[in-house]
Image (tube, rainbow, N blue to C red; front, side, top):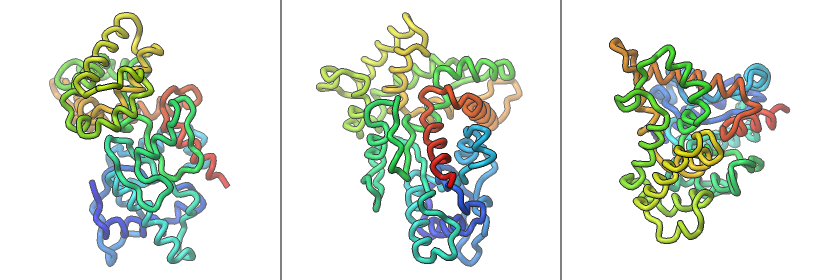
Length: 333
């Protein structure tokens, strides 16, 4: 959902007047918002713009450790598409600077968290020119140690937040328990199987127009995984074949949660493939009297968020947790 200029201004103006943000971190994120009225009908509570579904803002809040949910909880706001989030971010700064006395915003506590996606989304009037540059600076060497200082606009380390929903450890920690309640859970009309989902993502690479159009970015991202020799003359079809072979060898010799399996997924598959469309949005209830697919996915999302929250000290590769904890800790004063 992309917002037009009037909608961006109205939403930013509503956020900046919201008392709940006073002395708190504000985190703008992607997600649907209700139709935004014009200035003459402006609602004072930006919370009234949030839909009732389990959206990005609710997911991020539920991911926080309990102590941060209670005491130093940032205020999250859905702002539409990736581009709209960036527009609202700049609009908030502009409105605040025009009239600081009527603003509840602390500009040093304003942040955005957007999906990495695939492409070069520009970011005007910022220290980095686009989202890809921000990503490379935060995750500059590897995924083990993030460079979080000096940023107000953050990006996920994987292509979408939904890519974190299919991390291999969640099969054991979340999906198996969920399957006890919903034993006919399906993906693309077939019994739910995380291994098959990974295969589907890898098989999509050669024919994905996004990957073909942005293959220079793809090669930069996967250079953590492939050797310099493998990157020479690489094309999408060759990349698919390489990853298919690596996946088969890995699953024959190791578990998907092994170092080899995680490296393949985190450094290659889940940073370039269309996880949201091809994996997450294809999960449905295969029961004879099925629940709405959105209801099923929302319940799964809640279970995943609660798992991340409970295990915040021992998580691997859930970069969002590091970002949220860093923002909350930096914004205490």
